[in-house]
Amino acid sequence: MNVEEFREYCLSFRGVREKMPFPNVADRYSRDVLCFYVGDKWFCFVNVAVFDFCCIKCDPDRSGELQARYMGIRPGWHMNKKYWISVYFEQDVPDSLIRELVKASYDLVAGSLTKKEREELDSF
Image 1 (cartoon, rainbow, N blue to C red):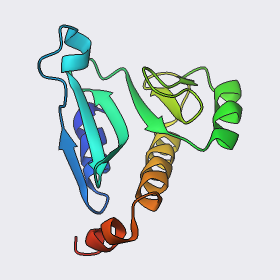
Image 2: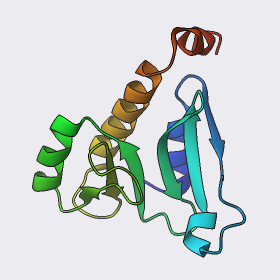
Image 3: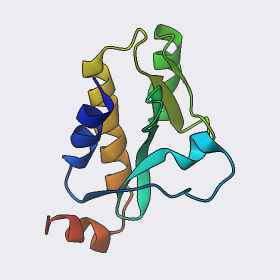
Image 4: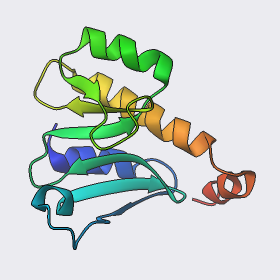
C-alpha cells in the first residue's frame, strides 16, 4: 500500500475530511502529518512525506493482543497509549489488517459522535 492508496481508503468513509493541522510547528515530521477526521474528531493520521506508520484509535481490549502478535503494531505515537496504536507499514502487518483496523478506528470515533453529528453523517 502506498500513501495515495491509503489516503483514498481513509477518504472513502462517509463524512471524512482531511487536514494537515500542524503547518507551523518546528518539527518537520509533525508538519507533514495528515489527519483524517469524522466530525471534529481524528480517527487516523499519517506522515505523508515519510509514510512509515499510521496512528489509529483501537479498542483497548484488542490493542494488547495486536501488539503482542505483530512487531509492526506499537503504542500510539504522541497519543493516549491505552486507546491509540501506531501501525507500521512494510513490517509484519498485512495491508488487509491495516484496512480493517483503520475501519474499526473510524467506527469507534463515528460511534462516539453526538446524535446530531451522526445524523449529519447520513447526509453524505
